[in-house]
Amino acid sequence: MPARPVLLLGGTRDAREIARRLHERGHDVVTSLAGVTADPQIPPGRLRVGGFGGIEGLADYLRNEGIALVIDATHPFAAQMSRHAHAACGGLRVPLLRLDRPAWSAGDGDRWIDAASPAAAASLLPPGARVLLTIGRKEVAPFLARPDLTGWARMIEAPPHAPPPGWVILRERPPFTRDAELALLRGHAISHVVCKNSGGALGTEKLQAARLLGLPVVMIARPAKPPALSAAGPEALAEAAEGLLSP
Image (tube, rainbow, N blue to C red):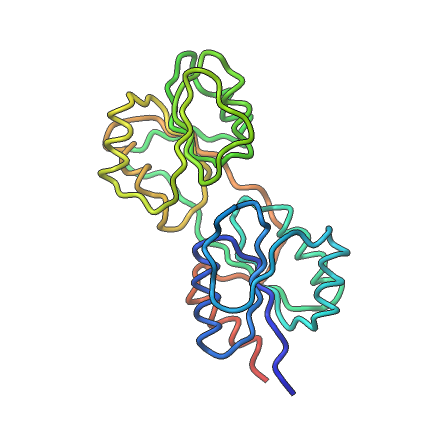
C-alpha cells in the first residue's frame, strides 16, 4: 500500500527547503500555495494552487486525499491559514506540525519601535518621515493614506493601484545584502524602516543596515497562532516529520 501524502502549507523559502528534504527521503509531498504570487518559486514534489474554502474545505481535502500529516510552513503572519489548519487537523485527528522560526529581537545599537499592527506602525511614524516599507503589498494602505509620508515600498507583487506621489514601488525578491541595503537607505535618504518581525536569517540585512546608520525601525509584532507541535528550522522540522511518518 503506498504511503499517504503529506500536505505542506507553503509559500516561503523554508517551506521549499522542507519540501526538498522530505521529497529526497521518498515522501509524497503536496505543497499548497495560496496563488497570490504570479510567478512563484516551485518546490519539488506535487503542487496545489489556490484556497481550500475555509476550515470545512480544508477538512474535506484532508479527508478525500488521505493526508497523513499537515506541515504549516506558512509565513509567521499568515495567521488565518494557521488557524484553519489547527481546526481542520484537530477535527480529523490529523497530525499538525508547524514551522515556528525564532522572532528577531533588538540588540545593542538597535532603535526599535514596537507596533501591534501595520495600522499602528503607520500611526507611530513622525510627520515627514521618509520610509523604507517592507511589509508586502496587502497592508500598505495606512502608510500611503498619510500625505505627509514618502518613501519606497518593497514587495514581490505590485499593488493593484499606483502609489500616491512621493512613493515608489520596488518589486524585488530576497535575498538582499547588507551593502545593498545600506546603499538603498543612504541613497534615498530613508529616515525610518518599517518591517514585520518575520524572524529567521533571511531579511536581517535591512536591520543590520539600519543599526549601522542609527535609523529607527518600526517592528510589527507577529499575530497570535493556536498551539501546535513545532520546530524552529527546516532541518529540525523535517526530522520531526520523519518521526511522525514512520510506521
